[in-house]
Amino acid sequence: MHAIFILWLRELKKYTRSRAQIVASLGQPLLYLLVLGFGLGPVFQQAGNGSYLQFVAPGVIGMTVLFTSVFSGIALLFDRQFGFLKETLVAPVPRIRIMVGRTLGGATVAILQGTLIFVVCMIAGFRPVNLASIPLGFVFMALIAVVFAALGTAIGSGLQDMQGFQLIMNFLVLPIFFLSGALYPLHNLPKALAAVTRIDPLSYGVDGLRGALTGRLMVFSTTTDLLALLLIALGLLLLGAWRFSKIEI
Amino acid sequence: MIRVQNLVKKFADFTAVNDISFDVPKGEIFAFLGPNGAGKTTTIKMLTTLLPPTSGRLELNGLDPTRQANGVRQQFGIVFQDPSLDGDLTAAENLELHGVLYHVPRKVRHERAEMLLKLFELWDRKDTLVKKFSGGMKRRLEIARGFLHTPKILFLDEPTLGLDPQSRNQLWTHVRRLNETEQVTVFLTTHYMEEADRVAHRIAVIDHGKIVAIGTSQELRQRTNTESLEDAFLSLTGTTIRDETANSSDQLRQMVQMWRR
Image 1 (tube, chains in turn blue, green):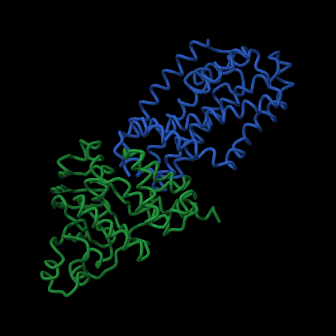
Image 2 (cartoon, one colour):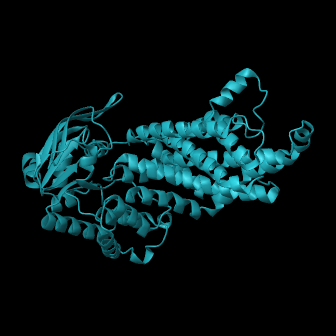
Image 3 (cartoon, helix red, strand yellow):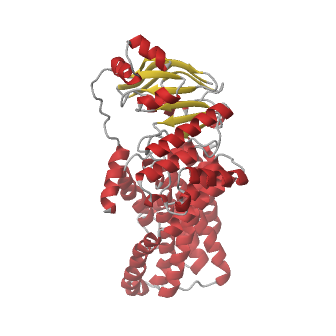
């Protein structure tokens, strides 16, 4: 347990020490929130869906959690390159604990970052409809964080250089974001697109988060979202642990 | 304590380690010498569970690194050739993390960390982030960390690379003390022949993935009919210079250094 804790703590320390990065990481969500939020607002309103800011805020929170947690997993690449990974891999601790410590640490950081964006959304004018369901919102944030931190670990375990990292960003992480319903409602989509959005784990995360915070425009039920995310999290944790145990230096 | 039989490691079309065998008994200081790219580090990686061998048998204290990785990891400590510190943590935090991973009890951990940081003259910089350390300081911290717990087998992969004479002296004094008082078996590689001559009980010379000679320093000198270990080494491995190709880590390190300027 101590090993898991100290590696979790390491992720947190690294996060709180990189102030410049925290500020920089607010940039993208703010763009989506403000530019799209106010830019698309009138069209969205005319289409009869209400306030776009209310709609997009949970999506932007979900996006933040997604990016932060995937990055934390892929940070394995940097630990590999700078050598620290070796130090943990030869330690007399089962690799599964090393992996769990890192992944939980990355997930925690992603939840903190998501919370920060949640506050920013509130400042921009977003209002959760029901204060009592905010904890449920955090449950969804945590699930999104674990799912994608585990996915990041699974991918990071096999990455050898920065080129691979770009590939993952452009062909996996960005599609996950754009297909998740973070930016537009998943209703009445062309069949093919609708099918793809249903295999995107973030669709369930954003849907659940949106349901908890605004109670509107949900595609699935809260139970479906919870179950889907739990199953995916379990599967990806197993995959991540397996891939991590196979790392060669 | 360490038993290697017919060990082979192939990377695609390149054979890094080509059918080597040797034994290191408990309590011995064993030096592994060879030119760059001879297969020293690859052998250490296989012994320390970081790399599976292509074929051959390995044993550390009776355990097999390929099948009993966790058990093997309980047996040894290692100082790596290339950096393995976390630059975003302080010196003290790096030691603390190591101590926790190696199950060193809290009190012992703190006492030893203080002792080692003072020994390697890092005590007044213990709360500085490691990324702000100079190359020499980082190296000293790596060595100090390697001594935080007392393993049965200690691997030292070119530990003195980039160390000043004072720290080198501290290092070897410490290694000898551990070896004499705690019967720690030591497996080391180095490019400095006089160090191997001074501390090692037995020396193996490896070249192109093969062991070309093994024995005490005196035996090697007699066999090659030379005066010093350095001459014996050159007579065994020739005088051509070997190059290692830069791997992706080196390239990334260079890139990051460029960005930081």
